[in-house]
Image (cartoon, rainbow, N blue to C red):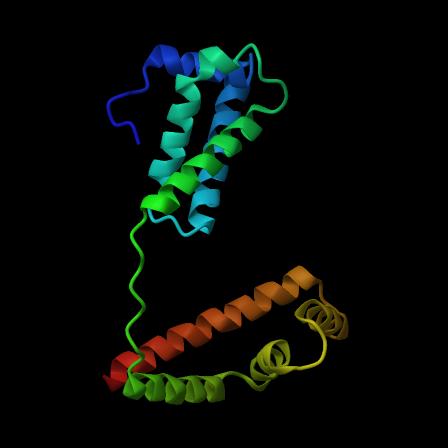
Length: 182
């Protein structure tokens, strides 16, 4: 990454002008593009996703005079193309990650005991819902979820929210159990 070049106000204004003639719309598009770039880099396992998104924007801005008159279409696509190339550079220089340490058998046993204990503490209705959501075999998850929502007479989104809340409560219970046992 080129650390010597810095984005000037004039460069930034030209970038915004390229994104949209309406300054407010240009700002919105800029933020959407930056957010999308961060999601792309994060999704690819980049630890410094925001820095890579900013570098992508800087590279596009440095080229803005060359591409402004030639590029046709959605400017976001140009950013994504530059991000793809930057991602390839990043992957080439990224040091190989060491494998995670082997799991502690005692810790795994403790986590399992806490999971069982916390599942027992759930209401009968929540326990049945959680077990049906994750324990059923045969159908795909989407088919199971749809059938379960229909059976309960609720929307898919309401089912997802209910299951999410149960999982959050279960996770909190497990963490408390583990901390109390250590």
